[in-house]
Image (cartoon, rainbow over all chains, first blue to last red; front, side):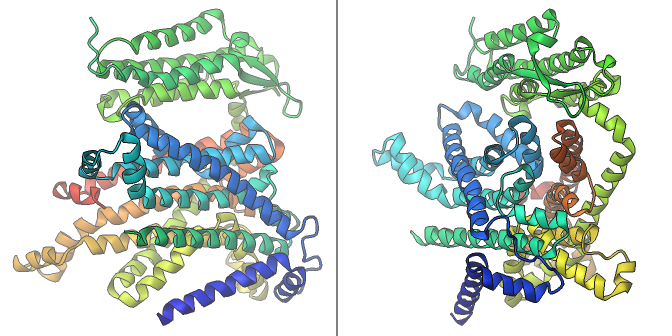
Length: 245
Length: 391
C-alpha cells in the first residue's frame, strides 16, 4: 500500500514537471539554464513547445486511430468463416512486416508518397496496423472453442458471439497490440521530423544540426515523457479491463 | 471435373490479382536525367516490350482461371509458382526498361522503382503466401531468393539507380555496413553481460523483481532517438570534464551514446527471457535429477542449461532484430551505420540512396533472425517443443 502511494506520488511529480516544462516557458528556461549554463540560445523559438507537442500527438493519434480501425477489422475478418482463407496470407505479411525496422518503412514510404505531414501519417499508419492485426488474430484465436459452443447453445447469433463473447475475452490481447504499436508510433513519429512531419523531433533535429545540447535535451525529454505517460495510460486501461470478471 | 474440396479456396488469389492489376495503371519506373532534376514517370506499357506486357497480363489471366479449378493444395502450389514467374517477369521488365530508356547513354541518369514495380513485387509475394507456408515443398521455398540472386549477379539490373549509387559509394557502403554490424553486435553482447545476471537476480530476489522490470520496461518505451538525445548532453559534459575519457573514444555524439542506448534497449528481451527460462525449470525436474544422483554441475549441464538455453536464445533473437533495426537511427547522431545512407537519401530526396541503406538493413535483420532461429531449433530438446510453444 505504502509502495503504491509512493509510486503515484512519483508519477504525479514527473507529470507536473512535464506539464510545467511544456506549458510554462519561464520554468523550462530555468531548467535549461541550470543544465546548460554555457549555451547562449537555450529556448527553441521557432515554434512554441505546446504546438509541437500537439503536432506530435496528432500525427500519432490519426495514424494510430486508422491503424486500429483497419487492423481490428482485418483481424476479425480473417478469423471469421468467410475470411479464413486469407488467414495465412495476413499472418505471414504481419510477421514479416514486424521484423522490418519502423524507420525503414518510414524511409521507404517517403519517396513514394512525398515529404510532409500526410505521407508520414500514411507510413506510420501502415506500420502500426501490423501489431494490431497479429494481436487481434491471436486474441480471437485464443478464445476457447467450448465457450463459443456454449454461447451458441444460449441461442446467440454469430454476430452476438463476436460482440459478447469473443471480443471481450480477446480485449486484453488486442489492447496489448494497440499499446505496442502506439509506443513504436510515438518513437517513429520523432524520426518523422526528418521527413517534414513536424512534432517534437523538429526540436531534437534542430539541436543535432546546430550542435545545441539544450534543443536536443528539450526534444528528447518531451518525446520520452510523452511515450512514458502514454504507456502508463495503457497500463491503467489494461488493469481496468482485467479487473472485470 | 471440378475437384474443389473447398469452393472458397480459390479466393486466396484475389488480393494478389487486385494489387497486380492495379500496377498496370500507375507509373512503373521513374527516370531522372541526373539526381537533381524532377523525374519522368513511365508506365509498364511505356517501357516494357509488348511481349512482356502481354506475358504479365496472361499470367494474371491464368492465375485467375486457376482460382476456379483444381484442389486447394494444387491451387496453392500453382499460385506459388505463378508468384515466382511474376517475380521473374517484373525483374525482366526492370532490366529491359534500362535498355529501352537508353540508360547507357545517361551516365548520371537514375532509374528508380516506382509504385507499379513495388505493387508487382507485393503481388508476387501475396501469390506466394496465398496459403499455409508449411505446405510448400522446402526446395521451392528457396526459389524466390535464387531468382533475385540470379538477376543481381547477372548484372542485368546494373543500370538501376540503386546499383549506380552502390557503384559510386562502394567503399563507404562496406565501411558503414561494418559499423552497423559492430554497433548492433556490441550492444547485444553488452546487454547479455548485464541482462543475464539481472534476470537471475530478479528470479532469486523477489524484492528486486518489480523494480528491475519496471525500470527496463520503461526504458523500452522511450523512443530511440529521444534516448540517444538524452544521453548526448551528459556524455558531452563528461568527456569535456575528463579528457582521459575522450582519449578512449568517449564522446557526446557518435558511437558512445548509440551503443549505451542500444544496450539499454536490448536489456528487456534478454532479462525477461532469462527470467522466464529460470521460471520454467520446475523444482520437480531438479528433484528428479538429484534423485538420479546428479551432482550440482551435472544438474546445471544436463538439466538447467538444455531447458533454459533455447529460451534465452529466443531473447537474444528479439534483441538482435530490434537492435539491428534501431541502429539505423544511430546515424542521426553521427554514429554511422547503414542509416547514414537512409538519412542522406531522405535529405537529398534520393530514393535510390534510401534503398541502398534500407534493403541491406532488412536483409541483415532477416538473416540474423533466421540464423538464431535455426540455432534455437537445433538446441531445443525434442521432448520440450510443446513446453516452449506454450510460453
